[in-house]
Amino acid sequence: MKLNIIGAGLAGCEAAWQAAERGVSVRLIEMKPEKYSPAHKYKGMAELVCSNSLRADIVTNAIGLLKEELRRMNSLIMEAAEATKVAAGGALAVDRYKFSDYITEKILSHPNIEVVNSEADGIDPDAVTVVATGPLTSDKMSEFIEQKLGCGKLHFFDAAAPIVSADSINMDIAFMASRYGKGGSDYINCPMTKEQYTEFYNALITAREAELHDFDKESQKDIKVFEGCMPVEVMARRGFETLCFGPLKPVGLPDPKTGKEAYAVVQLRRENDEGTLYNLVGFQTHLAFPEQKRVFSMIPGLESAEFVRYGVMHRNTYINSPGLLSPDYSLISSPNVFFAGQMTGVEGYIESAASGFVAGINAARRVLGDDPFIFPRETEIGAMAAYVSNGGTGDFQPMNANFGIIAPLTEKVKGGKKARYEKYAQRSLEMIDNIKNDI
Ligand SMILES: Cc1cc2nc3c(=O)[nH]c(=O)nc-3n(C[C@H](O)[C@H](O)[C@H](O)COP(=O)(O)OP(=O)(O)OC[C@H]3O[C@@H](n4cnc5c(N)ncnc54)[C@H](O)[C@@H]3O)c2cc1C
Image 1 (cartoon, rainbow, N blue to C red):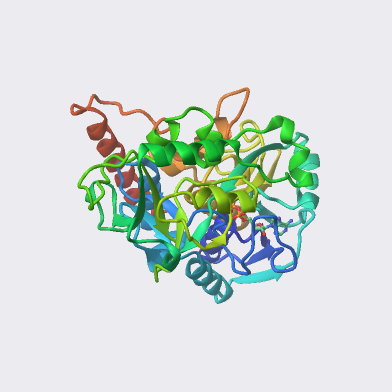
Image 2: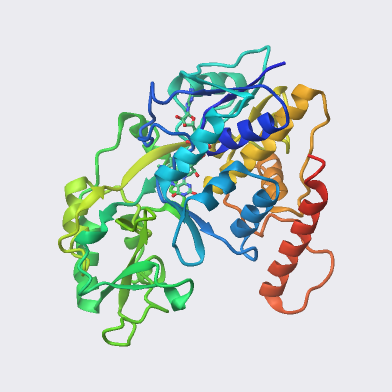
């Protein structure tokens, strides 16, 4: 039996690669370049539509642990990230174009993968299928999924940060540094006095927002902003100092000109290896483009900044997975159909890739007639699968990797949270090392 995978994003590419590596013939169906979602712009696969950061890279952080689990199991997404990373302090960030090109090249040259560029509007009943069409699944496919699953889809909103060219930043004001000096001087920092911050703050909270797309208006009444991607203007409206404790936190970033911490600091992170482009960290926004130029140019150091991409805000779609999906990401009512990626209710690039990993190997096992492989909840990859398939009742919400969902430790660990997280990591990685050759 053939394996169809719909969507060549983070989840679909990982799923296709894992299945193909296990000897299964894969047909990967991707609608680009024939059709693009409102956020996708690049022709390549596994496009990062917003930040170029894949977040923390230490195993005592849940997302760092998830990365290490994937690395040890030969994840294509992690291989590409290592090959295309850019300097980003303690985080793992990539050059988004090289990252996409790397994955596209690997997929296109795999002998077991056939790529078909067309929009899918349903599922072939005679094939095992992984649906990995993402948070911006095309309407035709959304309709099919709604009918197939017999439940309404949920919407919420994500926002993307603007990017500026490095040579347009005034380095007489801005300075290079990482917080607390960790990982070298990877970020450009724009310090603000209280007066400068006050002026900026007042402009930000009163700036004009962009018109919503028609498809977004439909769901406007049910807007749920994901905390990790909250528009900066929405966060600012929570209170005068909220940003100073969030993305504009000045601690650990003394201005070399004064030796003191400023009242607030805007950080900019590299977008590419060459360091020619930088994004405004935490500045996902839904402001109208001219308003972004006006308000963000008030940031000291950005007065003449060239905005090569403005921030945008888009719909996000996910299914109500608990009760619909098994922990191998297959549909309980139709086990030949698997779901993967953000639309299952995992949240984030690496989480999407991880769900693609689990769905890919299990879809391959189904084709080969093998039993499903359920990852233990002691691993972060297994904890995510358990959350998605059994995330409680009521208002199911998308979830980033975190240690709150991993199986609790059975013994008491002295040394507080840090020691506990170290133990989670050690326990998980031992398990991964034991099982990786069996899957
Ligand atoms: C605007 C926005 C910003 C985000 N920002 C971040 C961020 O900064 N950091 C983060 O960690 N996560 C972010 N996310 C969340 C999430 O991590 C990403 O959306 C991630 O790309 C999800 O991976 P995926 O594989 O599920 O979907 P995608 O990577 O979107 O892949 C889905 C693929 O399916 C294709 N497709 C869709 N419909 C069809 C069809 N009918 N037929 C064939 N192909 C189809 C699409 O073209 C696309 O290539 C963001 C999401 C959105 C919407």
